Length: 328
Image (cartoon, rainbow, N blue to C red):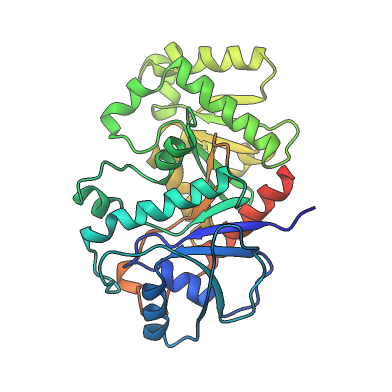
């Protein structure tokens, strides 16, 4: 089995991404990675944190090897303006996307085995006049993936989303037989090939309270969700649902399940983050590359303070390593 090579993007330069990586490399590492970020910003942040940091320049074609404590292999991308910890700057928004594009390019070319992303700030990117909805959609576009699926994992709980960053008023119309079929096929495929689960059991939430209660609280279950699941079951997929979301997330239902499909962002993720915040991992399914991420935001108020917690980043790195090994 070949040594794994990860690329880690630092995300929003004013956020805690730089802090997390600097704190991480103070310790002995067991997987080799390249950090994609601005060298001057990383040096300044290390000084602010009062932590030793030696940057080793990485260029395409260089070997990616484990570094000793206090050292970091860095693929430098220049940030247009000086970064102030905790202070957003629209001028630096294109830099964030450039780091992501470089990581995607490297993964597609076989230079890297996986990408791990620190948090970015969607709002400042949009304020810069760049249409942007998130990492998931960005990597789908760069890799020409038809349909990316967002899944978060914490311990044994995995929650995927049928829709992602949509206003609640648009969720119902986005849930169609075709979209549900494609999402569930991707989840089933990636649980098999990325998580080495032979016959994954997927629980599916209903959209409405009480899963529609026989049409009294909505017709999406009867008209769309139930017929779609019936067809997929007939093809051999191991699915249970639609189940009311308020009872699905209980030990009785979750026991023996490999993943849950929630219909919208805030139906499934609050439960997942309550159960595993700080060590949960965001995984993008449906891509030809491996991408994992932390489960939290940029925490601008913590940037440069030394109080950022590295547990989610460590979990994201471990998850990327596990998936890459499964695919090897």
